Length: 283
Image (cartoon, rainbow, N blue to C red; front, side):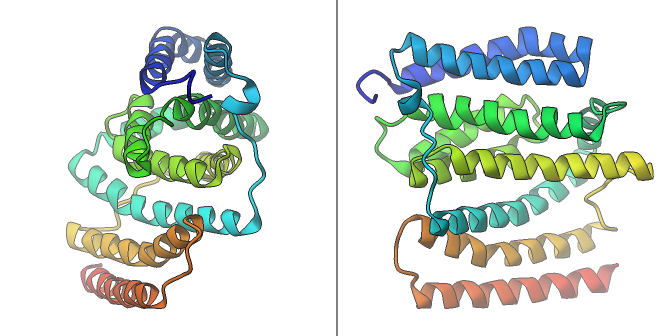
């Protein structure tokens, strides 16, 4: 497959997806709401399949679905947990400096208005996990394999995934998730776990949206006051260190270094304790 693909072809596929997203996806979603969202995701799937056919790559090569061993499941979930924790401070800081992020969140929530919970899960969690992962971690990542540096590929794919969502306020959190999904795909040589992690991440968002809808509340990452928020950010960073360290060891198939884990654990405890103290003193 590598002989037939190149990074340039990957960027072309990404550009084609973005153009279709802007022209057709926006029309679909504006006209049909949540059904338009579903149509948009299916469009991404079609682009991925069309690119594989056009480049002469078999679907099995372009979209590897190897079922990883339990150990790789554990490593990828630890990385996702770490990302989830580390993304929270980014969201809090973004909301402090750019309150407009709440308008973006409201627009995402609004697309689910009037839709059944089952349809919300299908269109907002399942389809994006399948279609976007087959496009990004399948077709586009396959085109990047000539770049032998995993860190460089992960960074490129993270930036593309952040740009893909066309939301400047969500760019960094989305890019961070894209990095985790990409790194998992590289290390497991499969799109299965990135799809699963993507689904879980979106499912959490859907459940949150449905809970807000039923309780008629507005979610906010801000606790109260900037000092308290700094404490919360430090706490989440502290909590994210250990799963990040363990997940990286497991996915890299390296023996866990007890010294490194000990240093990470000490740093985690110190940061978490400091964050809790700062938060409690300023609430």
